Length: 278
Image 1 (tube, rainbow, N blue to C red):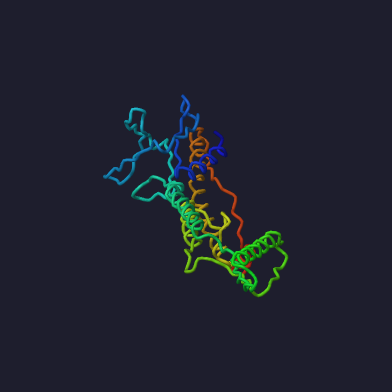
Image 2 (cartoon, rainbow, N blue to C red):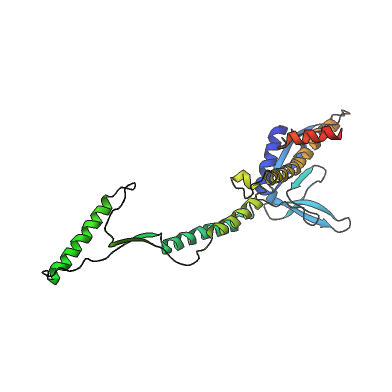
């Protein structure tokens, strides 16, 4: 494994499983690193040593037993771990429940919209008066013919044309009355849960509920702070491997691994601030 490929695997494992772990294997002469073996984080368990409050790593074997790992050659990094639990938290763990809720909400919204329907155009036609010489049968037949004529003219009407009639025709809308359910607010709340679980900023998924520049800048800075936290774990892994190899080779050099600095959105104001301070 090259260090660049190992760092890519580190980020892939962190943002998928919430943790990354592996073990260094030396060659037979114990004077250089032979390889770094990536371990499935799901097979790692920790036991608390109550004497010094430290955690000892173990790996689950095929038969279910726990095999102790050498802490000197073992590396583990967990996302959002704390002092009580060294295990990392996968950003995807919160998604199944939220996605299930979102799919159910979309299904309910579809059923409710189908039940309520869309506003419908309603034509109310006032029947003309009956002529004195008309029988009841002729009168109803004439009304039906007039209604069919209006229906045919409406079907042939273009969207950009106007409807011209006598004042015996009234055009209205028919729609459900009362306050409708604000589906957009519910869907936004679910989307916020997904975004928070993925450790992302809303603007990265095409969502932003703030309109000011300072709000967007604050989101970007929070995202960069989270990225620097994860990069710190990758830097610790790379420096540990580099420096371990130099120690084994008895080379009195120490390596420091750096990531390229993130671009600052407000670079002009930041430079002006540094100029004022200096």
